[in-house]
Image 1 (cartoon, helix red, strand yellow):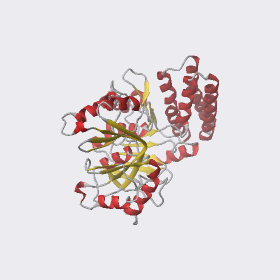
Image 2 (cartoon, helix red, strand yellow; image 1 turned 30 degrees about the vertical axis):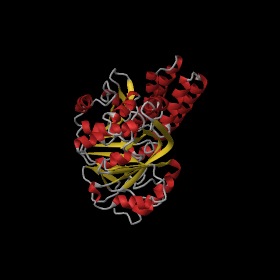
Image 3 (cartoon, helix red, strand yellow; image 1 turned 90 degrees about the vertical axis):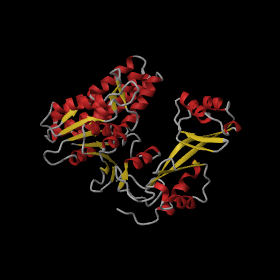
Image 4 (spheres, one colour; image 1 turned 120 degrees about the vertical axis):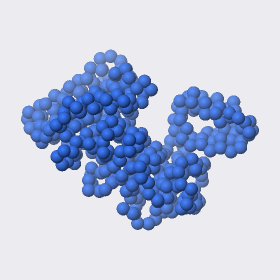
Length: 445
């Protein structure tokens, strides 16, 4: 069994869907579960529709619903040249949008918003399945993710439920080798439609791979693997051929957009390799993520923007038991995660990426001492095999950044990570300096 996930750009047009249908072909006997995202642009459109309905702007909301419906009519006509298949496809589209139109009859609830957001994945999978079975005449089964993907009462994936109910669905089709299902969407503990948040299709693929005990999980996007630096701002980047689970998780969390931060966790727990591949260049080897890590000191750099740095300075901290615990409890009360932390004898500095409760947090922290807040901060994360830093990697990093002001440094908390906090306006300069100082050599492929 292999699990193959295709992102929004990979299924963004009828032409791309036809290409995916070719990519998922496999030798007889190879079972596959294909996980699809919504077509590119659809989720953003649905988010906007929900926003308009929440605001009570029914005229604009209804207009946007109809615009999106007509777009899917065009996709269906391009994808399904057969008259009978097209009629079925147009009905699928209209049924999906009818469920959205029905939600305009009363004020939109949070539950209604989840129903709207689910339509993107439902549309892409239904149209793709129709193309496979009616146009290509292939045997494929559409497995509704809402029948087996569920969150528990803590809003975390219910792994036991997913495993049991996915197995039950697969058992209904013992002779079938190809299954199509939705990423991102699920049900919550109350049975209502919910989702795994933005980017959750990667997470869906990993959860499904773990539940099905897959031999490999493939994440297909529009770039040939995870690059050693941000190709949007740095020239001459190259794909990394191998990463460990821990290295990939660090890069995903700290800004590598190709991979959802949670997506490697179920795969890591079950030792299932994850391969990142490019639908636009399917012959490229991509990036393999597994339990293995190489000897290369620093493999890649990622950057995470939108950080706020908070510094609490107090003479009470010196030799005081429980001071840090009291600081952390402030953030816990406001359900705000900490990304990075450094301490001295009289001060603690940390970063958060969610400033929604910043005023309340600062007010509470001022009980302990003076508080300084710096917004518009970026974490630069360098990932590799840094156990005991036998390669002298840290000195190379600081030499490369000798002209960049460093706000915080975190090193030693992980054998795979050096994290640096800088002002966001310095990010591009820092990434380019690191690329020149660390990767100015031919890529090893």
